[in-house]
Image (tube, rainbow over all chains, first blue to last red; front, side, top):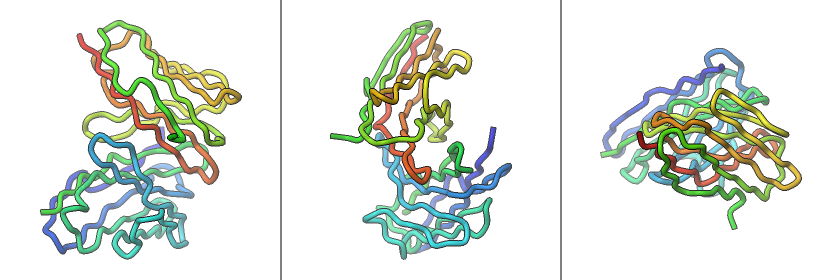
Length: 113
Length: 108
């Protein structure tokens, strides 16, 4: 099956620094990529939808200047958490679709100290 | 009322038991995913179906579009099936709506 690779799987950073998370579709071209956030014992919360070459569409309540999304090619999208704070600590997961199925990355556990 | 309702929220079974997880949704959909999330967090799409029934090994998924209901069945359950199972209807633009998930624990 199709593979979506997400890196890093875990990251610990200091408060005030920025963290970049990469999401790559390895064997297909992803027309759309989704970024989700998940708190413990809760379901996935959609943060934004990105299409290659265009600006991401952010969900209500998600700060676009805080969570920068770049979808530079059909196989790569990045999420940058800028000026991270402890409340940004969470599990972030991407999903890529070729308009037929959805494939998920392994997720990134972000801890801001 | 949530757009996607899953039941049960938690399920504990003995190895070998037949398991059913139900999903009802109120949104219009083009298809529905059943996802599996292991404790490490990674998510795997088990099925995507838009009608009828699909089977992969010990897993069976069914959907009734008219009744807006889907079920996931696991036959001969095994401890390695322990995970969170999530129902995710797919609406317009490939966007998924997620159920709260069912935590399944299969004891040996």
